[in-house]
Amino acid sequence: MRADDSSSKEDSGTARAPRERNPRGQGDRLREEVIAALVRLVNDDDRMRPLPLSLREVARESGVTAPALYRHFADKEELGRAVEIDGFERLIAAMDAADASVASGLPSKRLIAQAQAYCRFAQEHKGYYRIMFKTDFMRFASSTTEPHMAAELAERWRTAVARLREQDIELSQPPEQAAMFIWASVHGRLALTSTVESIWPLGDVHDYIEKLVESLVKVGLPRHPTA
Image 1 (cartoon, rainbow, N blue to C red):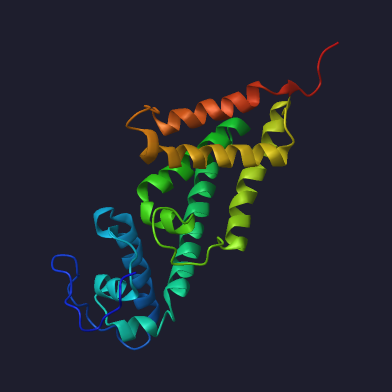
Image 2: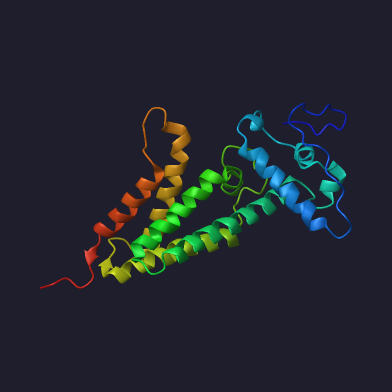
């Protein structure tokens, strides 16, 4: 584990220029900048080697002193939880916006739109995604994902899958099980990208999502079969 040695030299080429001191009353701005700094660090594969990150490195990336950072976050777990919550809020907002954009369409299209938004978030905000789901880096937050935020996200999948029945399709699995199937499949497909892509071309993840949702609908039985 890296030591938070106050006498160690700062890494050349990686530290950001010292930031201007926030005027009194702008502590929230500093807090947001620290969160953004950790996300940038975790997003950068090269700078994440070797692990783990220290709060001192996050402070350097933020352009603040370590004591200033500690006034907002007592330790790495507290900072990790703050980033995790912020990430879940952003992801849920992105899924809600995608759903609203196709609200007049078929329920299957709404589910596809939300799953596509989930994938875009994972691809475009890798730092957040890694912290939220504890992947590829030392856990800043606790080993358990923030339960209330995970519950809010799960509810999006439940609602989207439940709407499929509005298409007069009876799913072959109970809605709760089907919702977890979709979430786990999308999440697992994203996780496979960096692991097996070099030996097993996976194709475009967004095409995968469309086929996944279509298969869930097609394997269902008509709710009111004809005699």
